[in-house]
Image (cartoon, rainbow, N blue to C red; front, side, top):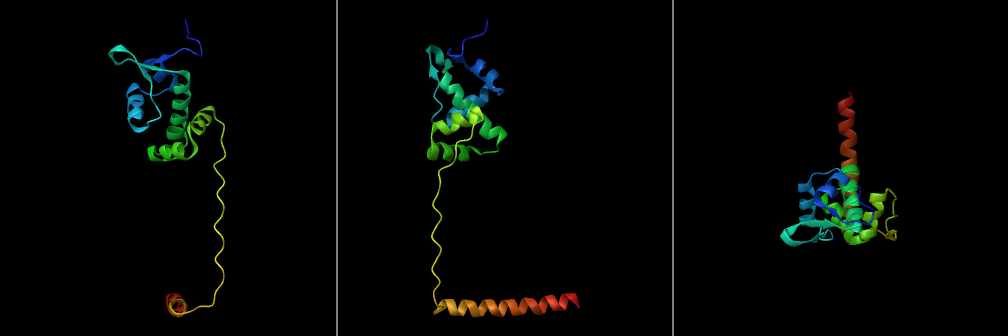
Length: 136
């Protein structure tokens, strides 16, 4: 008899559903503070349906999309649990839109900048000479 969608899952049932070994779930608990299954007497873990949804997202990000553990931690920190759940459901949540940095204003070369531009011209001239020697 199968459990209902709202039933709690043991670690073995969660591992089977997510297609990962049980030790991986225990490891993820140490790396991701947002994974906190309910623990009963004797330390038995029970995963709520929301826990399974988050784990599904973590699994997809790590195993299918190539994220690192630090990458998933950063994603959680910046976008929250909803982003992880969305990843598990296969829907993409758009990353936050970052404003592009304003383009630097053109200024007249002064001081060090003039010296750098002269050095760049000298290097380009030297490169052109070397290219000519290599071809001939």
